[in-house]
Length: 535
Image (cartoon, rainbow, N blue to C red; front, top):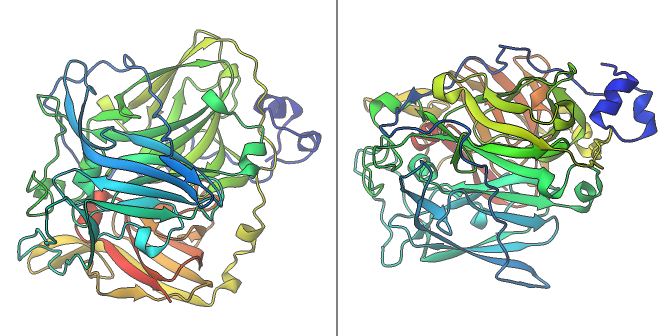
């Protein structure tokens, strides 16, 4: 796709050479009304009993950055307390949340590539917890394995499940009492990551109650780019929730205490969909912006809902709405243009929006093309003022030599299909991989440290598939080229019903046991997870 000089100037693409050559890799992804990932989300709508507020009346808040408790030559040390808190999410009502430092979302951790961080997680909740740094290249003992639990003080190790639970194999072979130190070497490039609860069988309800936060890795290469910075670099955690009459979170747990039988009511086994859309914990917020470029780090932190994000109105000059600069694993090699952004659970997209294309006074709504009624809107931007803008979007963002060189011919192993499908065991319907429910003692793959492998994935329903430890490259979908939104390093790939994907990854960094699973959290809790061990 070629761009005129006028289009390049609109984008603010840096470098004279960019004006004379094609914008390599650029694409227009999805036209109006189209959904590249299929229709809707896998799950059932849980309607709120509380009166929901009018959209665009609450201001967007940006979560505070967590300051280290101390720093030394070895790295930065943080203290986080997982505890209950009360927040006014719906006007006039208080919602009890479970949060990191008692807030939802939790505080943002900003780390430096190559500088280690140690996060001491204290558990002051009534239930066990396990914290996973999603997208992090972490040692196995700090990865948040589902049975590597922090028990509340005074609670002994226990399975907490009924004998006929699908997770009857559960045992807490590794557990801590009261707190655990998670060691993150941050030996990876700059990227937008996030951390969330990963307790076996109860990830869905515990994330729903608020256990999620941003973890942003920065490096010199990203810092040096003339992309929007400071107040124009904004993380957006998008998720859906439902509320009871008193403002409490509504969730269809079989045991609301989360100490006994795991799982959800039968009607919601395909996933729980809320009817209120929150951004950084606020319902349908508004944000006042200047007529400049903004970098938005977009995260879908929903349990089961997918979004197709679009701007309404679209830029009046006819240009495309979003310039993607980063994916799950950090910067792309070159920017990509999209009209809409389809985003599944746990995916991240770093995009630039140029509000100079709109007259001051314009209101621009971020829509969800996969939503209806209350879920059709996400938030609103109000172009409130003029400001000078020194940012630009370079034609080249990062060196992708390693990514480009990761070809199928480099693989030492190609693994046959990992089938993500509904299963039945002992009369109970659940979700599994290769016909089996999750068992911590069974290994599905044993890649050698440093080896390159190709994995084939296929599905019977919408499943966003996440691999721990590694970032991978999507080689193909259904035997054809990947979608434009599959670009760059990924740790989560969204597959629609009946789709197949081929991905390639280098299994380096650490030996040990990790998991891969569906990131529809109800599917994950109902056993759609498996182990691999790097040997």
